[in-house]
Amino acid sequence: MTPRLQSALKHARDTRAIALGTGVLRQVPALFKEQFPGSSGRVIADPRTFQAAGADVHAALTAAGLAGGAPILLEDEPLVAEIRHVEVLTGQFAAGSDIPVAVGSGTINDIVKLVAERVGRPYIVVASAASMDGYTSYGASILYKGNKQTMACPAPRAVAADLDVIRRAPAPLLASGYADLMAKVVSGADWILADALGVEAIDEVAWSLVQGELASALSGPEALVGGDAAAFSRLVEGLMMSGLAMQWTGTSRPASGAEHQFSHLWDMEHYVYKGEAPSHGFKVGVATHFISWVYEQLLREPLDQLDVAAACARWRPESEVDAEARQIFKSEEIQELARRERAAKHVTREELADQLNLLRTVWPELRGRLQRQLLPSAEIRRRLAAVGAPDRPEAIGITRERMADCAWRAQQIRRRFTVLDFALRTGLLQDILARYREHGDE
Image 1 (cartoon, rainbow, N blue to C red):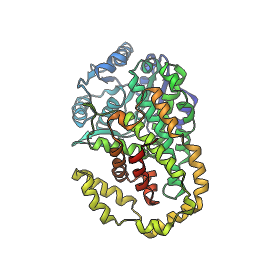
Image 2 (image 1 turned 90 degrees about the vertical axis):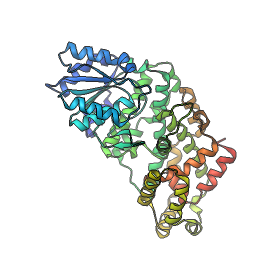
Image 3 (image 1 turned 45 degrees about the vertical axis):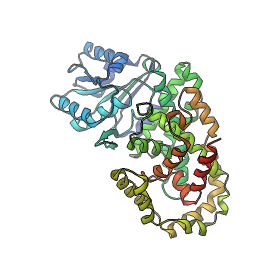
Image 4 (image 1 turned 45 degrees about the horizontal axis):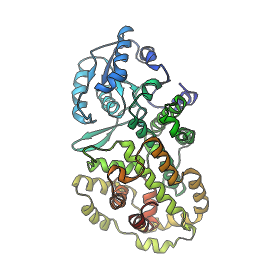
């Protein structure tokens, strides 16, 4: 384990141990025995992750006298983190006392995370790819009644991440994880906005965990593609730190902003391209580039001279926005979700005036903070392309027109204050999206 991860574990609520490095699979029995004394473990994997690491983990646990029931393979193709898998596995584990041993990445981890919560046991995850930041995060993203929902459940007690295994994972998984980590650049900018305007203060511990070495972790996409072990270690550490920060705060704020709202929206709308849903990281990466471009448009504005009265005059009552939402959201369930989330962050014209007057005062300093946090959108595009991640919406089948329309909907489905809310409240969102529709992000 790296010194940063060791230090970060002091702030984790659920995770007590992380083994990261080469040859880590050999350490799994000792890690298991340390964290679950007197218990036996049962491997859950899919056919690919069982071949990549699960068979070795089961063999090692068996040799150490720590294996419980036979490995369970989830063989659906494609495997989706849906509630039926959780219910079946819950029944299987409730009948015994084995500790779940998840071997896989996002889907396997989410399923097993919720199963462990339902049977009242901790679990361990053996990472098979650097594909997302959810290994160490609380909560599981599960398809339930047709919609992806984040269900409350603890993070794993222990994580084993063998770089030898992770470096052999399919290239799209690496690209997805890199894009998910790149999102922390713009989600950090969103938190800076919320902090400066008195909406949500930055938690310095969480900020340091995510942002402290972010630039280093993102600096070498070419080295990652080349399989460089040090670059992979930095990437995996960055993803783990994001999850630990979410454990610390109890929210996803440290690692998720406007860019994630696009991914959530597309999940809710069951968006598919060429017959399948793009990966979470690919959706987030495309949205990260778009949001960085939105920031560039805003940073050109002299907001210290904003006409507050005009912006407040344009501020629409909630009843009018709600009527429009019934037109732009096809699902009644999403309409109701949007109504609740908008209501949680709604401000009156008087409150808006106070916020915008504050903005006029702090804008020169705030603009500097944002410029230091952000990467140029062209550089984000270059790095995403270098690692093999989609670098523009068209790469996942999203037209410019649809991307702009999605910004309106994405802003409404989460109560979190982001740059989309900022642009809306300043009265600039409509013009920025019109510019995007006409000229794109060139």
